[in-house]
Length: 100
Image (tube, rainbow, N blue to C red; front, side):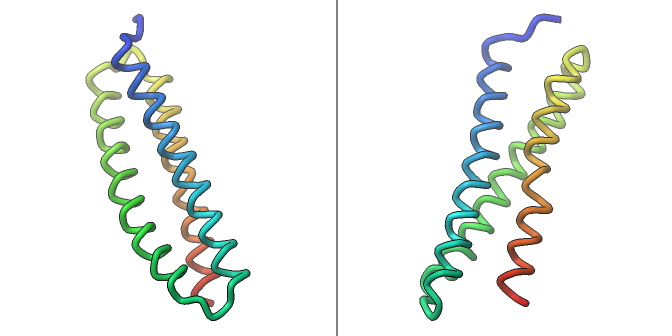
Protein backbone atom coordinates (compact mmCIF):
# COMPACT_ATOMS: atom_id res chain seq x y z
CA UNK A 1 0.00 0.00 0.00
CA UNK A 2 1.22 3.46 -0.90
CA UNK A 3 2.02 5.90 1.90
CA UNK A 4 0.12 9.18 1.89
CA UNK A 5 1.88 12.50 2.28
CA UNK A 6 0.34 12.81 5.75
CA UNK A 7 1.86 9.49 6.80
CA UNK A 8 5.26 10.46 5.38
CA UNK A 9 5.13 13.83 7.16
CA UNK A 10 4.22 12.13 10.42
CA UNK A 11 7.21 9.83 9.97
CA UNK A 12 9.49 12.82 9.44
CA UNK A 13 8.12 14.56 12.54
CA UNK A 14 8.52 11.39 14.59
CA UNK A 15 12.11 10.84 13.44
CA UNK A 16 13.04 14.49 13.94
CA UNK A 17 11.55 14.51 17.44
CA UNK A 18 13.50 11.40 18.44
CA UNK A 19 16.75 12.84 17.07
CA UNK A 20 16.12 16.26 18.64
CA UNK A 21 15.37 14.65 22.02
CA UNK A 22 18.56 12.61 21.85
CA UNK A 23 20.70 15.57 20.78
CA UNK A 24 19.27 18.01 23.32
CA UNK A 25 19.50 15.47 26.13
CA UNK A 26 23.11 14.69 25.26
CA UNK A 27 24.04 18.37 25.13
CA UNK A 28 22.36 19.03 28.48
CA UNK A 29 24.17 16.06 30.04
CA UNK A 30 27.57 17.16 28.70
CA UNK A 31 26.94 20.74 29.75
CA UNK A 32 25.85 19.63 33.21
CA UNK A 33 28.90 17.40 33.67
CA UNK A 34 31.36 20.07 32.53
CA UNK A 35 29.79 22.88 34.58
CA UNK A 36 30.00 21.29 38.02
CA UNK A 37 28.03 23.10 40.67
CA UNK A 38 25.72 24.70 38.13
CA UNK A 39 22.40 23.29 39.32
CA UNK A 40 20.32 25.26 36.82
CA UNK A 41 21.47 22.93 34.03
CA UNK A 42 20.27 19.88 35.96
CA UNK A 43 17.00 21.64 36.75
CA UNK A 44 16.46 22.39 33.06
CA UNK A 45 17.50 18.84 32.17
CA UNK A 46 15.03 17.39 34.65
CA UNK A 47 12.11 19.26 33.09
CA UNK A 48 13.40 18.48 29.61
CA UNK A 49 13.28 14.75 30.42
CA UNK A 50 9.68 15.05 31.59
CA UNK A 51 8.55 17.09 28.58
CA UNK A 52 10.47 14.93 26.08
CA UNK A 53 9.05 11.79 27.69
CA UNK A 54 5.46 13.02 27.36
CA UNK A 55 5.92 14.24 23.81
CA UNK A 56 7.73 11.09 22.65
CA UNK A 57 5.15 8.93 24.42
CA UNK A 58 2.33 10.67 22.56
CA UNK A 59 4.13 10.11 19.24
CA UNK A 60 4.71 6.48 20.20
CA UNK A 61 1.02 5.96 20.96
CA UNK A 62 0.03 7.62 17.69
CA UNK A 63 2.52 5.42 15.82
CA UNK A 64 1.12 2.31 17.48
CA UNK A 65 -2.40 3.38 16.53
CA UNK A 66 -1.39 4.03 12.94
CA UNK A 67 0.41 0.68 12.85
CA UNK A 68 -2.87 -1.08 13.58
CA UNK A 69 -4.93 1.14 11.28
CA UNK A 70 -2.53 0.93 8.32
CA UNK A 71 -1.21 -2.55 8.95
CA UNK A 72 -0.09 -2.95 5.32
CA UNK A 73 2.57 -0.31 6.03
CA UNK A 74 3.77 -2.11 9.14
CA UNK A 75 7.48 -1.76 8.29
CA UNK A 76 7.22 2.02 8.05
CA UNK A 77 5.51 2.37 11.43
CA UNK A 78 7.63 -0.26 13.14
CA UNK A 79 10.78 1.65 12.16
CA UNK A 80 9.28 4.88 13.60
CA UNK A 81 8.40 3.03 16.81
CA UNK A 82 11.91 1.59 17.14
CA UNK A 83 13.50 4.99 16.53
CA UNK A 84 11.34 6.54 19.26
CA UNK A 85 12.06 3.66 21.65
CA UNK A 86 15.81 3.93 21.06
CA UNK A 87 15.84 6.97 23.35
CA UNK A 88 14.62 4.97 26.35
CA UNK A 89 17.89 3.16 27.20
CA UNK A 90 19.88 6.31 26.45
CA UNK A 91 17.72 8.32 28.87
CA UNK A 92 18.05 5.66 31.55
CA UNK A 93 21.83 5.67 31.11
CA UNK A 94 21.94 9.45 31.39
CA UNK A 95 19.81 9.39 34.53
CA UNK A 96 22.11 6.74 36.01
CA UNK A 97 25.15 8.90 35.26
CA UNK A 98 23.57 11.94 36.89
CA UNK A 99 22.24 10.27 40.01
CA UNK A 100 25.07 7.85 40.75
